[in-house]
Amino acid sequence: MNVPLIARLAKKDVRVTVREPYFFFYLAFPLLMTLVITVALGSLGGSVPSLGVCQDDAAAAYLSSSGAVDVATYPSIEAVREAVASGDRDGGLMAGEYYVLLYAGDTTSSERAALYAAVSSALAAASGSTETVDISVERLEPRGLSLQVRLIPFLVIIAAVVGGLIISSSLIEEREHHTLDALFVSPATPFDVIAAKALFGLFLGMVLGLLILGLNGALTSALVVVFLFFGVLFTIGIGLMAGVVMNSMTDLIARMKLFNIVLQFPALVILFPQIPSWLGMLFPTHYFIAPIISLTQEGAALGDVWWKLVVLVLCDAAVLVMAAKVLRRRMSGMLHLPSL
Image 1 (tube, rainbow, N blue to C red):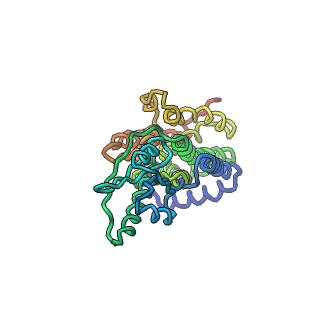
Image 2: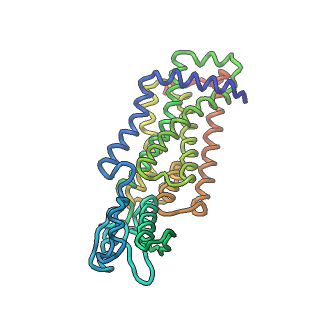
Image 3: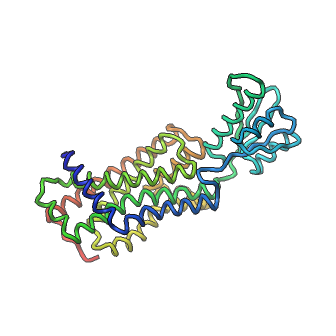
């Protein structure tokens, strides 16, 4: 592996690609969709969580003045529980022998964390103590993911696909302008070319994915970033093969529209729960978007999703090996492209 050469090739890709009109379209499209969805279905970066409390609760005034949560008072504990169960409130505070923080089943992990932190601080302030107040937690059965949450997989897959499209578009442009031919007689190996383009596409896909997750309040743990990384890496391999096999940009766009349906199918399973969940498991993208939803919305841990990470890594390895073989044949002059 020639690291300086890979760095020079990557810099060249950046310099050439950012001049192309498709570059800004690929970047703007998923971000624009994210902004439209978050504005239409929720506040940017996640709404302020709402809390129900009994009207005679001493902590109600502190919670209301903090601004960290949207507080509403109810005449009884039963009314608070009913408000949470019906979805009117994200959580409820019930006082008795000890405090119980009741969560609605479909609250996100970031909303639950915000509620717990705000309530704990308010109770400590109300009691005049500087120590954290111990609060028991109860979570109702989920009523189902919100529409905004169910649309996150579509946006994340689009972000991942952008990295692959940037690479394939770059390869096609270089072939059409015959700049790729110069690599045939250069010291660059197929691995060097793959690594340079993969790094560029991986960087773009990760940045877009992290922005989309952050704007939707779903960037909650390092495990989410790990799954996003390997998900983008999978589309990078697809992009490398597409860039070699497709004849032109028109051909690429036309065929990627069809292939995108395959990539997005697991997101359809999440959007429409009536579709059997096992169907989504037949597609590789399931193994990075389903764990992201489980981690951010259902409180899953590594022990719950580790096997999906293993499957995803194996899918990445398979597609990158195939991409390396295809590009090696291309660079050695052994690949004769058919008319597609």
